[in-house]
Amino acid sequence: MEDIKKLLAYFRNALAFSYSWLVLCTVLVSLIGGQGNVTVFFLLKLLALCAWGSLSFVFSFLTRFMSRKGFLIDLTVFFILFIPAEVLMFYFMGIFEGAGTPALWITLAVIVAVFYIISVLIDCLIMRRRARSYTEKLMEYKSGKNTILE
Image (cartoon, rainbow, N blue to C red; front, side, top):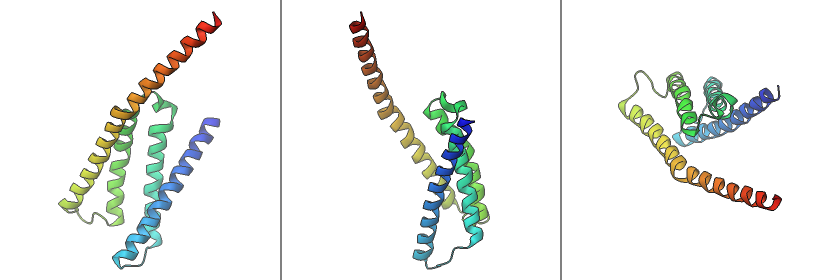
């Protein structure tokens, strides 16, 4: 039961963070673009998108089921769960009206690919090196502790 409470708290926090930032960005884009109005229906669609994204995030990164799979598997599962829903919500929100323009599809694909590549590079170049360093220091600590006890 404690795990469910923790997952619900993570979901709540992720939803609150993503929704508040997207509402802020939507209002700013609306004001800068000269429209000046954001409908309640659009905000509800935005809430649905954020809820699905938060649920996908919590499942992919924070559940026991996915905990031992590794970061790249978690990230891939998140993208597989979230991107189709994101595209559907873009249609429902009117961002990709009709079939969408090639420029919109290319922009979306480039953004996804760039973020995925950045995440892979961060995982491979920085996090694995740090993990090795932490493991070595832990082994040194344990070996020092064992020699003191003997």
